[in-house]
Each structure stands twice: as structure tokens, then as C-alpha cells.
Image: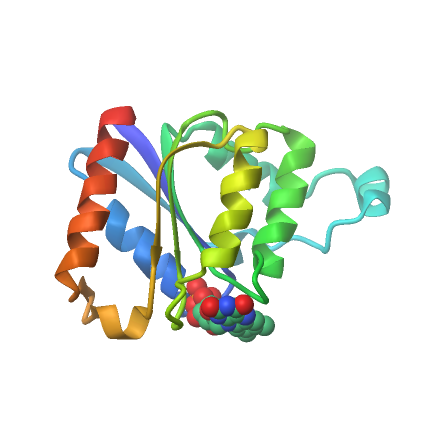
Length: 176
Ligand SMILES: Cc1cc2nc3c(=O)[nH]c(=O)nc-3n(C[C@H](O)[C@H](O)[C@H](O)COP(=O)(O)O)c2cc1C
């Protein structure tokens, strides 16, 4: 059975991106879903000095091991001031020091959502241009706008968005 990791790229306990990534992963059949919560892998703020003095933390080694065993990933990006959240960027920095190909060239479905109408489009553009250099094999991407209007009681209530997501998920399923 394929190991698929879901990540909400946020440290918010009530992360809407974590909800969207896990919801999307839950639509897949016959996979082993590994739900990554960045709060379970808390790392010090990256610095080359800490790296030189202390090496990699247990959390970094553990998260790297999760990425190592993934056959594919569903990542949903939270947007803070048009960019990655500090928590995600920090994990990304640390992981990149263990293996520059953070995403291991495994198929990735890349999502983003926010309460606003752009659905995290700026952070999406950032990741679309950057992740491929870190081994990101993006087989589909979708911004999900106005999360609280379009996702209610654990379900997508906007049928166009649901169809679009299922379409991307179908392509992802074929790629893994
Ligand atoms: C510091 C900060 C900056 C934010 N900047 C943006 C932004 O640039 N664009 C946006 O759409 N939403 C922005 N938001 C709102 C987030 O999209 C919203 O908090 C969302 O819930 C974050 O995703 P999460 O729940 O997965 O953490 C910002 C929120 C915070 C706290």
C-alpha cells in the first residue's frame, strides 16, 4: 500500500490547510495516509550556528524519515503576508539541510487555502516556482478560495470546487 503524507503547512492547531489536505487525502482509496502535524515536529529557529553546534534535532530527523518513506504528498499551504508560514519555512529550511531534494521527486498535489478570495495564490506561486528545485514533482495544483464559505461541516459545498479537486486527485492517484 502506498504511503501518502498530508501536510497543512501551518502550525495553527485549527489550520484550515491541514483540514483541506487531510480531507483531500481521505478521498483516496487503498493508501496509507500519514497525517503530518508540524506541531509534532517543533524545531528551533534555523541558524547555521545551531546546525554547526548541535547538528540535527530529533524532530528534524523524525520528519525527514517521514518524508523518506512517502510515495506521494498532498501539501496545503497557508499564506502569511503572501508567503509561507514561519513554521513551514523553518521546517523546510531544516529538512533541506538533511536532503536538498526535500520532496524526493514523489508526486505532489499542491493546494492552498485562506479565508480570502485569492485562496493563498501568492504562496502558491512561490511554491510552484520553488518546490521543483527541492525535488517537488507537482502533478496538480489548486487554490481553494474563501475556505469558510466553500467548506462546511467537513465537506466542500461548492460543486465546481469539488469537481476541480477530484479532477486533480484523479491525476495524482494515477501518478503515485
Ligand atoms: C500573520 C498573518 C498573515 C496573513 N497573511 C495573509 C495573506 O497574505 N493572504 C491571505 O490570504 N491570508 C493571510 N492571512 C490569513 C490566513 O490565510 C488565515 O489565518 C488562515 O487561516 C491561515 O491558514 P491556516 O489556518 O492553515 O493556518 C494571514 C494571517 C496571519 C496570522
